[in-house]
Amino acid sequence: TPRAVRPAAPALSAVGVRRFSTAASKLAAAMQTELQHEKEQYEQPKIVKEFLDKSDWEFMHVEGHVNMSVEKTTEAGLKIQVQWQLTFPTDMETEQAAEEPEESTEFAVTVTKPSGDTMIFYCTTHRRETHRFLIGNITCGKGPDELQQQTTYMGPEFDDLQDDLQQGFDEFLKELGITNPLLDFIDATAVDKEQQEYMRWLEGVKDFVS
Image (cartoon, rainbow, N blue to C red; front, side):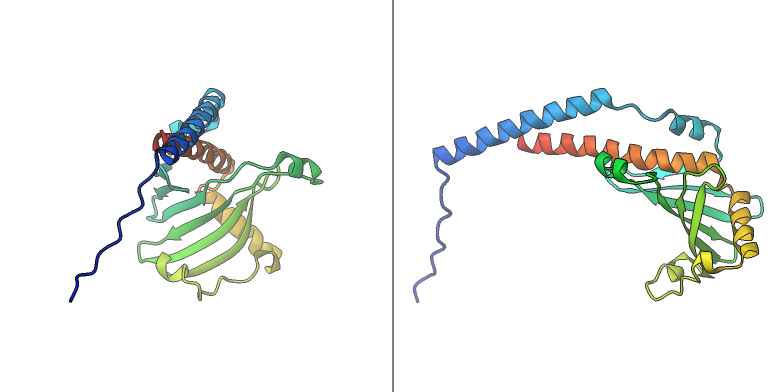
């Protein structure tokens, strides 16, 4: 039986190689220009360093990832973790068209007792002097993994609760450290993280095509 012959891969012509090299060189140059511009314009918000210098929260993030978090444990043994993600820049034209433009960041507060019992608050930062965050839903159960399943009951809409319950939950979160300095830090790092990752992406693509 004759052996099957694997067809040879088509050879790249000299013209094809030159075209790719030319396109890659142009792209690399454009990426370098954009990267240089971003680096010249970049300045980390002062609030980030100021908060970390004074705070008892431990800040965690990984290069190349969109998630961020802060954690601490209270004297009563409650483990508190606040999680959020980077946010993309606001479209200025859309922002100007809005009646009351404002930036906000979604975040989750996970409170875990030594027993493993856990409560998760799903919230959004809110730029109002009298109210800096809004609670959307609250779920409670045995451990974060159980509560983050798609079939988990998320609790009622927060706005549907009686006023005294809403006030009680607000005060509870504030006592745990969900205060204006942390919320300002969340908003600042959400935007700053996106800028840092954009510059890292520019660097990576530029190196790839160079």
